[in-house]
Length: 135
Image (cartoon, rainbow, N blue to C red; front, side, top):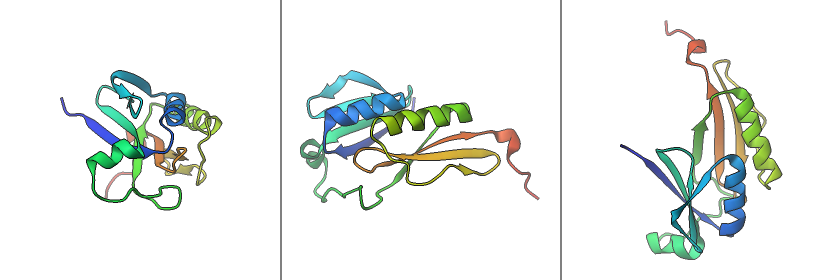
């Protein structure tokens, strides 16, 4: 099985763990310690949140300040617009910010949430039956 692991440097592992738990992630204690937590979205998608000290052991590059610079956009699909709204609202209550209002493409509704360190997540619902036909 193919899996995706996204590694993020965070300033406070415990606070970030609380934020991601509010979004609906679960913790995998097998791959977690005081310096990093494995947050599970699905059987195939994992987010490793790591202290800056631990993250630095994986790279020689400086860690970007994602509160003022974008380093990437991470998108997660869900099963309904209601789930999009629920997840983002939970993230806002957990200290996240919403940098832009919802975008509605007709076939896809998308909201963005930034975590406590400014990492940007796009939570979206897409209805393939509504995608415009190609001419």
